[in-house]
Length: 181
Image (cartoon, rainbow, N blue to C red; front, side, top):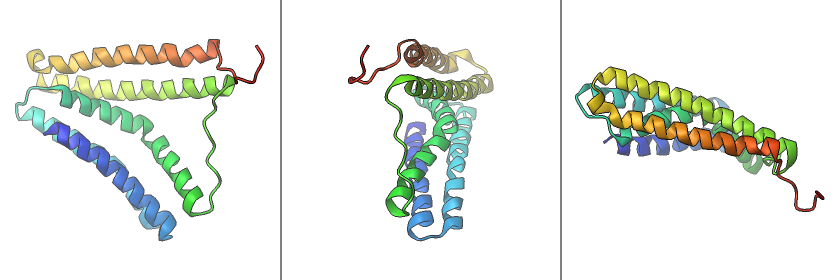
C-alpha cells in the first residue's frame, strides 16, 4: 500500500506543479497558480501520515516505508529547485520569460554546481534519516525495523560515493574539449 502511495504522491506533486504553472502562465490566474504550488508540501504530509499510521497499526517496516523516508527527504531538499526549474521553463515557453540558464558543464562553475547539489543531497539525507530514525523509534522493535536501518546504511554509502564524485570536480575540473591542457 505504501509503495502505491509513494507513486501517487510523486504523480500528485507534478500534477500540482503543472496545474500551478498552467493557471499562472496560461490562464493568467497567478493567485490560483500560486495556491496550487503552495499545496505541494501537503502531499508530503499525506505520505508521512499514512506511513506513521501504517506502522502504528502494526505493520513491519519494509522497503517502501524506507522509500517514503527517502521521498520526504528528497522532496524537502530538492522540491523548491525542481519547482523553480519547471517554472523557468514554463515562463520561457508560455509567458515570454527569460531563457533558462543552462547548468555549467566545465571549469569552476561546474565544480561549484556539483558541490551545491551534493549539499542538497546531504540535506535530503539528513531529513530522510531523521524520518527513518523516527519510524524506528516509533515502532520500538528492531526486528520490525531492520529494513529501515539497512536503507540508512545504503543511503549513507550512496551519499559518500556522491561526495567523492561531486568534489572530484573541485580537484580535477571538467575541461571543455576545445580547451588546451
